[in-house]
Amino acid sequence: MRAGPADARSWPAALAAVLRGNLGLLALLFAGLLLPLWLFAELAEDVHEMEAMVFDDPLLLWLNAAASPGWDRFFGVVSALGFRYGVVPADVVLCVTLLALRRWREGAFATVALAGSGLLNVAAKQFFGRERPALWESVAPEATFSFPSGHAMGSMTLMAVGVLLAWHTRWRWPLLVAGVAFTGLVGLSRLYLGVHYPSDVLGGWAAGLAWAAGVYLVLFRRRRPWRAGRRARAG
Image 1 (cartoon, rainbow, N blue to C red):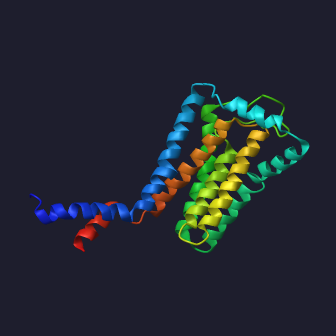
Image 2 (tube, rainbow, N blue to C red; image 1 turned 60 degrees about the horizontal axis):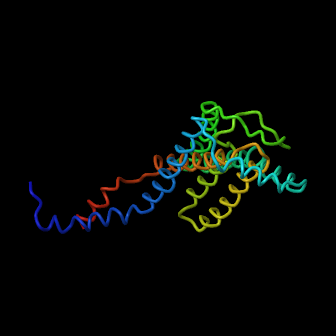
Image 3 (cartoon, one colour; image 1 turned 30 degrees about the vertical axis):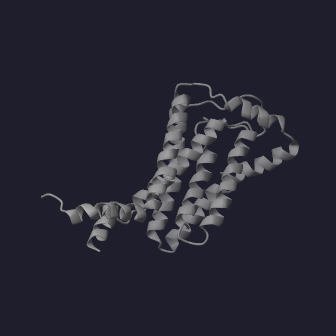
């Protein structure tokens, strides 16, 4: 059946209604999923082919030139908070609290995103098998593989989960600012300590953000985009 003039005129309005009603979804899909996945894929390809990245060693050496006992202590504390003594306890508290409050969907999102991030990181490290930097003897040496950074991935996943859960509240911007600052410091601490390349940290951030955004999109999609256009035409 051929579309009449009224149908033709309603097409732009319907499309505009669909886009307007899903701008947040499209932004999350692009900035939270597609862009980080592209960045991770680019880094992963170079790591898999054992290609040296021009910014890795110079940035590490520049940070090491500024090393001091005070910075050693500071970044050692930040690094500990970025995993065992900060991020992991926060993950557990967040998931248990949401489930105890019977917020099942939010609890499922937090649990799958946070636990899945850890499992994916372990699997990725085993797959890529990248050795740690050996430019100097670190004050906090690590024995596992390097890519992607578990500290960077875990802190980014926690930040993304917290911001997405709070997005429709007044806490979203304070959480975003605090999360960016904390995640950035954790990544910087791993570089300062000489246990990760910058590309490891970038890969961890990209993987953590993409995983959290992907889980959120799967669990929290409430309607299909074309239904907004259908309602607009009915109106």
